Image (cartoon, rainbow, N blue to C red):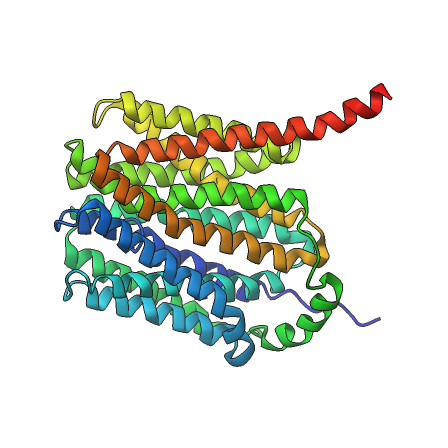
Length: 398
């Protein structure tokens, strides 16, 4: 037996910092603050929805081509391409106008997709099994901090375009430093040798299990919510009389809620099961949306609703990943890919539907869409649980 290879903790720490720094620039500023800047430059709801959809479309393209790129040029260069795409987006945004703003929108999303697949696959290949829970927990907490730090910067600088774009580019560029200081094997050979084994184990026609199916439904709801909420909430806030600082403050509270609820949601899923956790999160999300409908602008109820809505919406992607992680280990890579693609595709659809609905029926349609989605998720999951109980009752009566 060969001795176990030493754990590359410096490389693990470096790649975790790549995720954290790039997420602040790419998502915290690129996905959360840019829509605020656009809203105050006259972008209406349908065009804001198109911009948000362009970002998620770029991410979908990145998710699809990242494995192909990693096989050919390695994870380090693939991540570097993602960072470069985002920096170009920030560098050109202020010089463009509609509809050319869609180009940096696509580039910011492309950067996230490339970095997400390439960096995290590389990272988790280095993590020993006995430490995976702790490393993933730290990684996800740092990722979630982007939803706090990005909008907090917007509050501080009052969404000044020059500061916003410079900060987004700076955080993204900073992520390249630990990336290129990492000397660990970036997994290109592992991808090449692992792919045939995976294919033979899973098979092209392997069915998707009920747990993964529920996970895909949950992340679809989360994607529709994320895409619509972060892309169009600035317009909703503007229509309700909030200024840029108040809007950015509420976006910060979304991020704080998402960061604070990650661990409790995972803990509850371990103990109560995935379906029960989905029902609780979707019901709480509906409650938070009702709070927004009743709250006065900049009130304690609005702040509390923002915390709860941000937390429950972030929980959907967490629960989807839990579903994939708990599935058949032979199909783990496929299931993770299915969940991530479902989330990103639904995130394209969400802002498109909400944007045109807000244009036709008013800004409150944003919250109506979120409420309908969370209510439907509660109904679907309750029905799923009841359907599973029925065979048990029939067998016990026989």
